[in-house]
Length: 477
Image 1 (cartoon, one colour):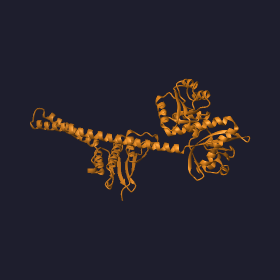
Image 2 (cartoon, rainbow, N blue to C red):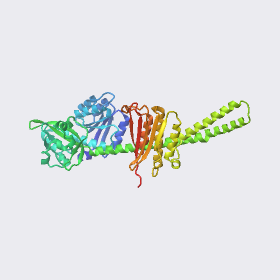
Image 3 (cartoon, rainbow, N blue to C red):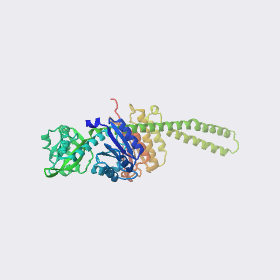
Image 4 (cartoon, rainbow, N blue to C red):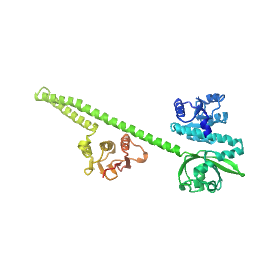
């Protein structure tokens, strides 16, 4: 490994996408790798021209190029140069072809958009080591033995019939913490977690391809390793056995999980900003309606009253105009009430919800029962109150629009673990197995996630719909 650190690495990137090429170069510059010559080609034909006068140490290869697709791209490049380590650059949709390329001898792969400078650096180092090992194995049996024992990657050999481990290298001893004697008394199942040791068929299936997904292995002291497994069939004492090479990806997976958490937190931040912007926009619109349009209509109403009091021409029409203006004012007030969030710190969450329910109770054929009066709002943040209000408002609107329900029950319960909002109707229901959530339910899920809320749904055709949202809240004693 030290030799690779000291020696500049000559690189050829075969990629026709300028964005992915740019990102790869940026990650290379951010890594601790000492990069020598760095060339790139946008097609197989261009790559062959580069290889006529350059000898890279490692090649990053996109399998799908303008003049070649899939395994053909790998085969052409691999036949042109035998000494370079080839790392396949793939997307998740190309994984089957990528695995086939790895089975044919590619050293490793990277998924576009799912690696950074550290993962890239580690991939380069391991790929160069693997290629170095491969070239030395081809040189002679003696060199092969030396490389096996001194390989920086853990390696062991086992019997395909008995699963007994026959040989191991120094890296395997250091990694798994067994002595050589202990190691060679184990079966390969002893390195797995107990739940993966159901039978020998299951145990051996982990090495049925040149590259397997990450597996859990256990060291002597019980510590868990996340490993990727590759293998070679070799002859040993006149019998075909399997040589396994272990790639410890524990750190890599931990990094990926950390990145996933960061992305989730970033998405939550974006969602929160979006909802805040929506609330601000609603408030602005509500104020505009109230301050401008409403005042104009009030003035018109006063003017009409004046005309009526004078008993001027076309008295009945003027009375009708007055009625229309009055109804317009009522509608604007309703719209303002829906757009501007209630001042929950003044009237309280329960009273705000009762206000929504009072409007719905005026609808024909809709009976509403509620369990809200016993709910204590002490210690509940204004943000959470507003979120509960909006979720309840959204679901009640869904019921009115889609459910054909005649009865609705809403409850708000608080206990030591948190707050639970339940909205249930006796409407037509739906088949949840179809997984078709409308915009309303998507909004509810998004809002709930901002406060780590858990949304659960119960429904079936003809049996109504129940929405339950639980918000974990730690209340002071």
